[in-house]
Image (cartoon, rainbow, N blue to C red):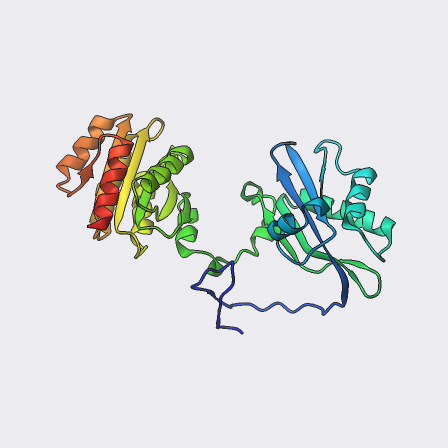
Amino acid sequence: MLGQILVTKQTGPQGKVVSKVYLCEKLSLTNEMYFAITLDRKTAGPLIIACSKGGTSIEDLAEKFPDMIIKVPIDVFEGITDEDAAKVVDGLGLKAADRNSSIEQVKKLYELFCKCDCTLLEVNPIAETSDNKLVAADAKLNFDDNAAYRQKEIFALRDPTQEDPREVAAAKADLNYIGLDGEIGCMVNGAGLAMATMDIIKLHGGTPANFLDVGGNASESQVVEAFNILTSDDKVKAILVNIFGGIMRCDVIASGIVNAAKQVSLKVPVVVRLEGTNVDQGKRILKESGMTLITAEDLDDAAEKAVKASAS
């Protein structure tokens, strides 16, 4: 297995190179169930989800057995109570495992969720064994990135070889980047504006190649790195820069674009829409650079020109 390409739903069709193999104990499972703790907006706290059926995704379970899924909200200040844990255990529908021991196990899982700054703790399946024990037969845990400073042991386990190299490079440059499958690279300041830009690209018949938020305090070097990441994607046929200068100044973005053009071989058309703080200086920097850019007056105009440029 080592060194081979593994293709799963998580890796996508291109697969990932296997660099590690984990060995685990073979278990004789007699009853598989579903258990998870996540964060719930509605109750503004942790939510435990349990189902007496398990071994498949929660989406499939919700479709096939909606009446079997129970949800137990936990008071974030009070913590999990014996009553809360008992509701979960009863919802799991245990057949042989000791009820009191199982209640304690649910409480310990909640303790783990809080102690490790998890955003998701999913045990699927949580199962009963042939010797009547309740075990976590498989699990998935997500951790809050903001807690990396106090969860150093956990974050030291991160394996960047299993991640999108563009996302790894973006994280090092303190950029918010998510790779997608489209043909129009996007560089925007602000997550909301980035989402709106992606939506309007779709509205005009294009497909965004990424989500890239340079934030409100990006430096020239970060803008250059953003262009490096965008141009590293062979699928990108055009780049749309959409900046609304509030905290982020348009002249900084413009200088970054010019410097990026000097360092990176820009082989695709670049559409630029600048508005806000120091917009006149920004436009002057771009004009005096001698670069061949496609300028746009507003977001709708920018998206339309980017889609047209990507098709040519």
